[in-house]
Image (tube, rainbow, N blue to C red; front, side):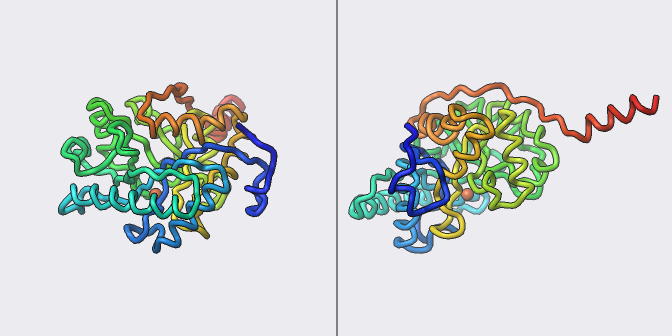
Length: 287
Ligand SMILES: [Fe+2]
């Protein structure tokens, strides 16, 4: 439900919408586990901002690199215990935010093996969706096969913030084989708002408007520079793809994901660059 601006959002001042029941599937909110929240106070501050901006569910997603894990099942238990502890603190602060366990897993060979052995965790520990981070500068050659293997094993990969990857920025259509192999993708809220730079912003807009990304998540790291809020990005997405589709990206699809339900998304649409059309036009002109 979209509400008129009210006191909840007024003190954050830069969004025209107040929306409720948003679900953020990618937040580094657990204190001291990665480059996200440093202290419990930081975590509470992040949850407070998320709640004020309409988010009611957060998946805590510390960075995990399977190739660097020594005692992997321990990491899963550490995250689950940290979520339980933070949830108690959030409740004691009177906040209506549910925190669920998860991981942002670095792309690596044989992720299915790590998943099946319980060494890495699915989104909300639901056994279905897997949040995967690609390197920023390139896409590993085994990525399509790996995504196919994960999907064939009954999991659904979610590619985190592809708009920040240099290869995707160069050619957004590089994602299409991954999506056809069964993956979903999410863009960062701060990419849409331009806080991650003009290249990521333009790419995020392309991905969202061409069905090459299906979800907006905050990738929140703190209560200051990278906040856990989706309201500003929703407003931009609503202008880009319409309000109904935008609501799906911040509420309906991520809710289905944390509940372990199936999601239905449109076929990806190829992005045609202006440069390509310009070349065609030039070719006609010279013949
Ligand atoms: Fe992240």
